[in-house]
Length: 275
Image (tube, rainbow, N blue to C red; front, side):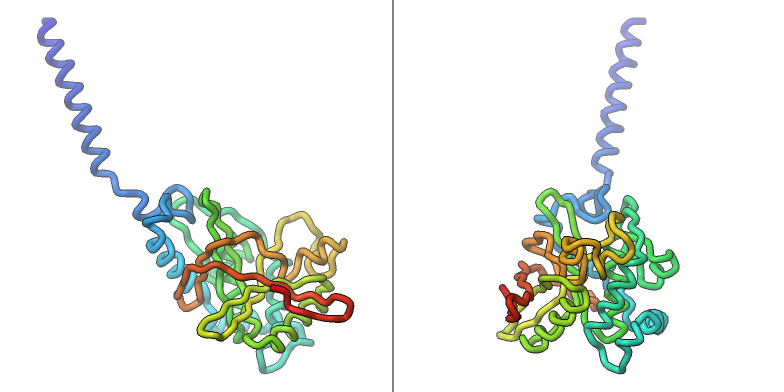
């Protein structure tokens, strides 16, 4: 009797070990796709290409700058003082103001990440995450013939920050005019930008990082309740430290780079780009 019980015990233990081995080795490699964080793969060292390609694909699908519904939506929200056949940075500021005034932050769902399309964001009543905000604002500005891109910054502990930028010119005169307009419209002291140089050609981009934090009145980003707010909440606000980033363009192309920032400021009547 005892011998039979001992044999049964060993049989049960062996069966449990076999079952455990089957389960473990049959499980898919989670790092190949996504982990519990909806944005960040568990390994960026050898999985970065998978992450970047998939995120770029999501962005290119979500940005609907050629959709006539989005184009009409944007046109209806351009200030009458800024109307006209040609794109201007004033129209980009109109879109920035409109979206930031109404945006409601929602956290990301768990599981594979999803960037909401521009039309999906409209149907949801302008609710979503930083990913959705960036794709939506890029869609509106792109539909008005502005050029945008989306910056993805990831910290060493896999926290991420995402925000859009809009192209403001290649020559310093054009860039100065655009930044002067932003400083005058919002009454801010400095207007920050990114400068890229490729093949000897410069490209300047205006920071459109979102400012929705629920701590300020509806008009904080345009008029400001204090000098701090005026200088903090506007297009061209100071950059959060970014380091090496991934830049994704509306057509799905992407690249890794280190951003070079500068700012426009007028001191004692003399305006200058500081780098």
